[in-house]
Image (tube, rainbow, N blue to C red; front, side, top):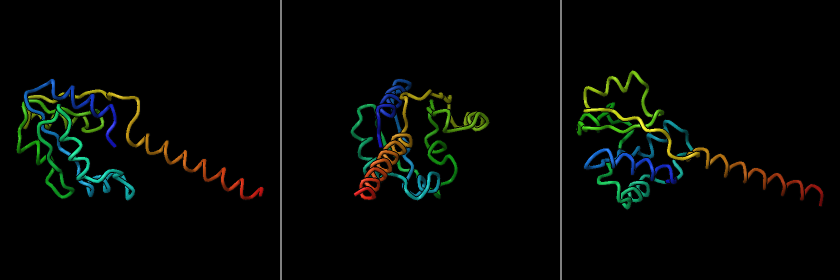
Length: 138
């Protein structure tokens, strides 16, 4: 689920260089990391949506079984942009071998996709509970 934080993050990343290449995790990679109910939006739609953003020049799918940092090693960017959650400090140090610099950006929104999903789930649960209570009292 693309939200305003993603748009802000990508625009800030774009401002750090001439070309912005975005690596997008495949559905399998996301399921492996976040569980069987994810992703909410299929990879084809996520890839297409990012392609519509003016800040993004190229979008590349990252598969679950791809070697570690394959895309970074292939491109060897002048600037790699990441969030604090993407890499641990030791990994950022290791990435210097393949990048001119690594820039860690702070979150650009007060919410996340996971938080939005939890809020939707809680809302649905509340509605089901209310409906069950109505049926019980009928």
